[in-house]
Length: 182
Image 1: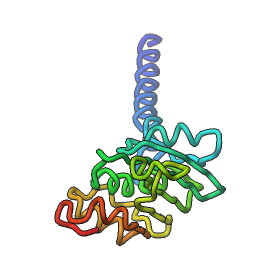
Image 2: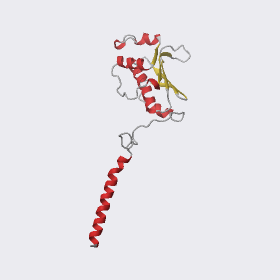
Image 3: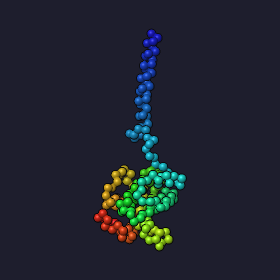
Image 4: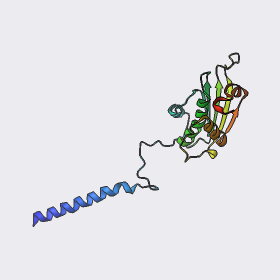
């Protein structure tokens, strides 16, 4: 009788532990998702200490020339040389606000300027403004993760969601490329 009692107690204890462990993942459910994975990127508050790390994680097509963080406004100057294509500029115009608004909690506005570094070396800075972007979190579409495929679609998306200013230098350099005038 002693052995039977011990076996029954051990069996019941094993069953209770099994059910307890199988229910453990469901305890942390949040809106249909299981535990947040530690490998998923989390949104962070951008500050002077981590701005280089966050910008460094972006896959940009143009070189970063200057970054300025002022409270909830991030300004980025990009450097474009003669080899840079219109698609490269528009992709960065698309990707920078998407990444910043998705990966940060405190950035509400992103300014991006594209400077043509090979344009006019007689200027003091050696660069001429090609285009500028003013993106605001209010105009951002968080659910849309599919990037437009063509240069035309990129330009349409960027111009419809953000404020974009093109200079005459931009028009001289890129007019008519890919069948789109802007």
